[in-house]
Length: 321
Image 1 (cartoon, helix red, strand yellow):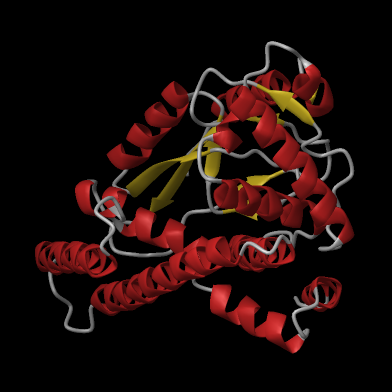
Image 2: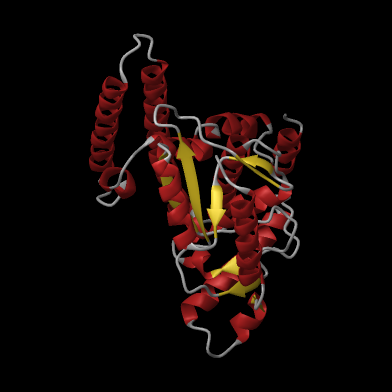
């Protein structure tokens, strides 16, 4: 990507500082729960996290250790800002090499300003760029990851899914394969939330969550179809000019947005898919979302083959290459 040695050194220096900021000054969640000044909702959420950690360790066979046992309040909505990039006429994400984890198809920043500056630099080089926010932060088991306040901004089911997703990364991570890791963690987290709700006897919440997953699956199918159509355009078998390719690309993006609007109406969810309808959609955004979603059906099949048993499922996945 044309990075100089100096810029690489600057990036890793920022990463070390950012990591330390998130992993120091932590308070055990049990202590926060007991503090008189802790508000009622935060206390309830932290008690829920303790419950979820116990469920993950004893019912899901996940490597929990001391992860998410300590809390830190952030004065921002995201733990990390994540940059994805793809060429103008390709849905293949750019990769970056990192110590320990190997190649990864995104670049994370602990400072929003740095992420925006890097995004602008990539755009000036002609790349499609997507800048997303990550509420969670995982060191893949190298450290005991903190429970950040950014985890707690959504529903209990979303909190559970995020926690199970990150603990899945901690339990098993296939070096150098971003789509494998993210789709696997997404699939297992979704199955885990359903097991948790079922054990609690929360039938109505379980049904609502399953309906939400059905909507996600509809969107995943649309995403897959759009990505496939983009790839056909970019093959450019007719040797069309860049101007024509760009027109075909933009027409497809508009069609994609129109279908998103149709899905939102069908679901009767006025705020669904807002970022896809109201914001720019490009190769990088489509490819980035694909990383998390497109292999989920494959991992769901493995779940059925493992008779819906978490331990057997994890053992099966670990044999894959």
